[in-house]
Image 1 (cartoon, rainbow, N blue to C red):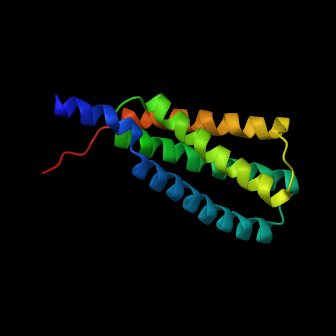
Image 2: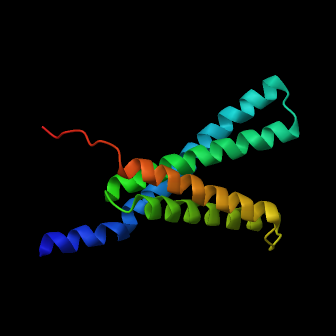
Length: 135
């Protein structure tokens, strides 16, 4: 009975969730710094730079969903989607604070949906990965 209770509470592992979100933001920051160096030396257009930022953000959300579902061991779609939603909500709120504009545009909604989708796909793959055997 106690084992069932601990398995059911795995979905609400707040400490791991916060660490995973922090890890995702750290990875995004590192990738964006590398992307900034690349964009500087290659003199990329604004449209190409925006695409690069979107790809890097999506990759970090994907990996975060993968980690979240792997940790929980079940409900990969939900685990990844929740991580993607929380990540993109924090990112959107930070952007609203920086720019002082408190409105949601179509582009903002699309980026949030993209984050949720990437997290959900990462979660589906993360929950189905083969675990290493502990020796």
